[in-house]
Length: 498
Ligand code: SF4
Image (cartoon, rainbow, N blue to C red; front, side):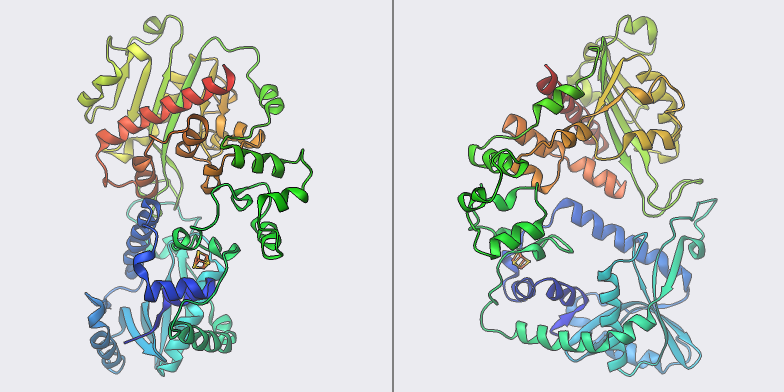
């Protein structure tokens, strides 16, 4: 059996303890988040599509880990079989290290190795991953003509059926992987020795806990860090925070001695210790909408960025509006909008099925989606313009640069909408809003915890639909979530600007 694989090697490069825990105490791992699961699924889908660039190959994927030795032997046999020119997920093992190479293509009397990535650009991790694979392939005696990383081409525009040769681009990393051979060899030995240790190596928490990936043993390693520790602040870089921590500044009191009491860092520590949040009210009030708007619409958008474009005219990861909810009232609503039916209430959502949209005049809520047919997403643009044009102010909460999004879809050229956007996400950033929950990201759910001391929002449908655009959740649930989130946007706005 093997000791290391691509993923465990990368984990070990990040932190020896993470590798050890993964191998010896996997039950202590944090639960996989829904975002991570969606990301894995996306990677698998792109990998399968990439096979079409080199069609007609044999899939060597084992159905279970117990099949690795058998598949490694079959891979080996295929190398000398002139009838096999392409293999997918070919299995190789060398020096207790196992890899499954995405694509291996016969190239004369040598082989072309291709590793597929479902992203638009290459990262250090991908290069390290390729270097490990090269090390194993070379160790197994596979003569290589080249080693390439294949990833998504951001310039590709879909026009008819997906053209896989245009969708992907490739970069040779042969020179890099050859240069890194010694580095990999040393690290393989080091990490094998770590796995053989009788106890987990002593590794203190540090920047490696989130770099390059959030480690899934944080629940275990961070459990003794007090909940109000300065390590949960965001005003300082993690590098600086941990530098101080490792130099003995390991309590809030010690950290406070080094800080200006009026600094943002000090305010954050105070917020941690008092269980409240920090906000720069002076900035907040200066950003308040002036004059007070007569009509306010709350807008919640659900965007989707498919790795592989679904619709003609779109590029990989280009966003489309999958759904939106608008909540608000304006004078003479019924006169302006004859579409509004009467007396649909929030409770009526149970009756909403796959209609194009549903208006709920009672609370001024309007929902549109194209869950059932993404080709219809461009309808959202005209509808948004029409619906939003009735309001003086459009309040939303989104990490996306909504103005850019709208610009891209040319909404902003319609001067009735673009300039009215009031993005609470940007406002809170400018006011240096802080609460420990937002260390993990300024999301609506974390905001709810920060402002109202509760977290009822469960942004599953947003995450699943935005990450994969698939139907892992019911559309009915997604529509309801859209409205619930929008209510939270409204509650936040009223809380901050009452
Ligand atoms: S949480 Fe940090 S210290 Fe613990 S295993 Fe992960 S990276 Fe290592």
